[in-house]
Amino acid sequence: MYVVCKDHVELALDLFVDEFEDAPDVVDLKETEFADWDPPAKCSQCEQHAQYLVV
Image (cartoon, rainbow, N blue to C red; front, side, top):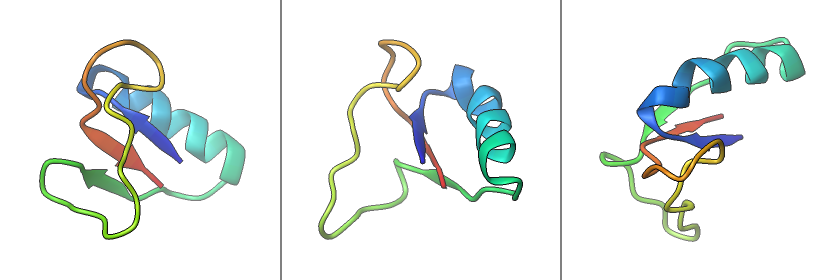
């Protein structure tokens, strides 16, 4: 699972495919709320605001 900004979506997709050898789902964090989990506010690759969850 990767929480990333718009600039790092492609990198997260590549990392996911390399690790799991399967296509991930991309979730827009602006449009989705989680009952028991708050996503990190910052991208896992930089300090920008996290916008997408790659799972």
